[in-house]
Image (tube, helix red, strand yellow):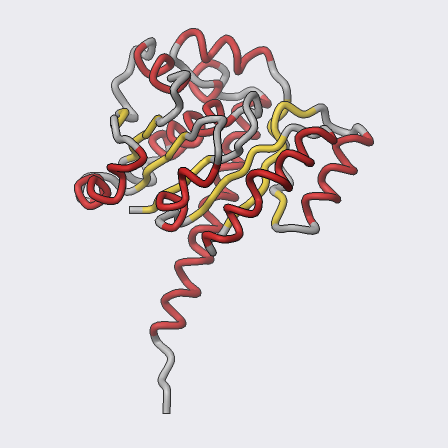
Length: 220
């Protein structure tokens, strides 16, 4: 099972939105059975799932402290796990992060968000030693602020070139328990989600291939 953890200690950056859209993208592509995990006390992901007409992807109720014991059970049933996190001390997710195949860090392009990221989230992520990417969220394309934020983030790691824009369709989908992939499949929002999912998969596959090569080395 591939575990994707969506993390940022700051609230309001679009973690739940990205988590559910990636999970639905995986399901729609038939990339393998996906499962969601919500540990946010605000229950944004759980509320969305309860409003959802479809029962897929399913939602697993797993506490942070239970994750390591429940992971083998989930791994026997699912190919992808998408783990949503709360706006809280990232250190509480240290054990979960060590199990991640990829950590996705949504960032709103603003000086406050970048400072918060550098102070609260990045140290914990880097300590985990797991691969991570930045995703610009709730962004307006072409602005100087977006460009400068991408530049600042690139000093610390890989920045996804697909921007998750500020779109009314995301809010409408959240109310309906849906996604833009389902509501507007030919729209720009759906296109940017598919591009993001393709990038996430490519990063996971790259890491997997490197691990296989390392295991195949002959030491003499």
